[in-house]
Image 1 (cartoon, helix red, strand yellow):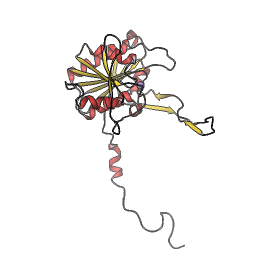
Image 2 (tube, protein in one colour; image 1 turned 120 degrees about the horizontal axis):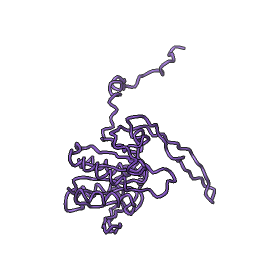
Image 3 (cartoon, protein in one colour; image 1 turned 120 degrees about the vertical axis):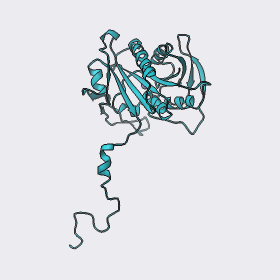
Length: 267
Ligand code: MN
C-alpha cells in the first residue's frame, strides 16, 4: 500500500506531519505537498509553467518533497509518475480548520482528494475544526481517527471516483463521541465588501467577512461536529442537479420572435 500524503497548509504544517506519521503504520508513505500555504485555493492545475520540487526535512526524521504548485498539482504530479511506485491511496491534511458544506469547493485540502478521485485513486481529506483564535491545535486525536478511517477505507475499499471528506472536532480524543457518516451541510458565509485606499489613493478591496458559520442540521457534517462527532462524508464529482433535469427539459430554447411577453403588438 503506497500512500501519498499532501495538504494545502504547506509541507511544513504540523497537521501534515501528524497525518504522515499516522499513515506509516498502514503502508509506505510518500509526501509531496506544496512549499507554501494554498488554503482556499480551490481545484488548480498549473499548466503555464513547470513545477519544481525540492526535498525537505519536516521533522520526526521524515523527508518530504515540496512542490511550488497547488495541492491538486501535487496529486497530479504523483499520479503522472513522480514516484517510481504507483500511488494506491491519497490522504490530504490534516487541515488547520474545518471544511464543511460548500467549503469543499474552496478547499485545497479537499480538492487534492478530488484530483485523486478524477484519476480513480481512493482519497480521504482530513480537517480539524479548530476554533477561531483557538491557539496551537492538537493533531493527535485527528491522527488517531485518520488511522482508523484510512484503515477501514483500505479494508472495505472506496468505490472509484469517490472521496471521503473527514472533519474532526477540536476535542480531546476521549471527549469525541465517535464517527458519524454524513452528507454535506449548509455553510453560511458572512462576506462583506471592505474598500480601502492605498497611499496613492487607489482603492483596493477585501471581500471577506468573519469566519463562516453553518446550519448544524442532524445528518450533516456541520451537525455531526456540533454534536462532538467526527464527520465522514462520501463525495463525488458528479455535480449534476438531477432533481432539476425534468424541469430543464421543458424549457423552450428557441428565441421567440416578436415583442417581449406581456406586451401587445397592436397598441
Ligand atoms: Mn488549509
